Image 1: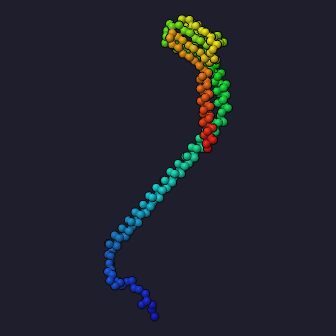
Image 2: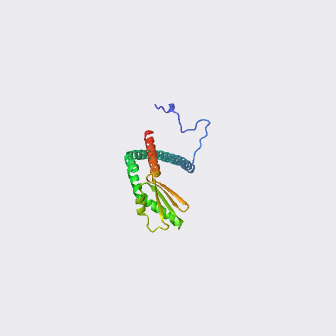
Image 3: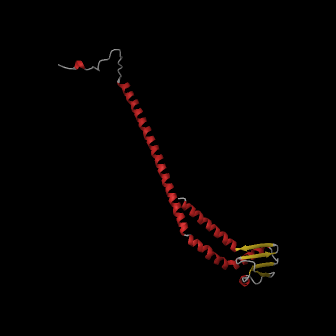
Length: 198
């Protein structure tokens, strides 16, 4: 005996429900519409996944660059601090000796420049005690009018006053050295602060 009478028959229309049969053309249109909806949804998902991937890549790249920048800054700060002894010897030994050796030459250059602007005017040069011979040896001997070279014990080494006519200039290598030393000290202080804030 069969059990077919116990199972519902789906081939026959249910009572009160109209069955709508599709022809092949309408069925193909529904298939194409379903395909288009599925394809569009897949495309949208792919675009969204790509945008999320780009955002993650950009975030990762930004974090990596930030880490590299921090590492570079830290390395530069540590290198700067390791060069402190060199900065100290530069400011305390090398630059003072260089200024001392070039002091007379610089005076002669300044005097020549001023004399070119005020031709025929009297020239006065005031230098620290004990430096007049060194300066006089570098000056041209045929200067006209004759240069008046005076030593002033109140001037410190590296200082001088020049006057040609009414034009006046002062040279102060000691002040320049002091400003360079102050700049180096400030730079090293900032490097130490940056390192201590890490």
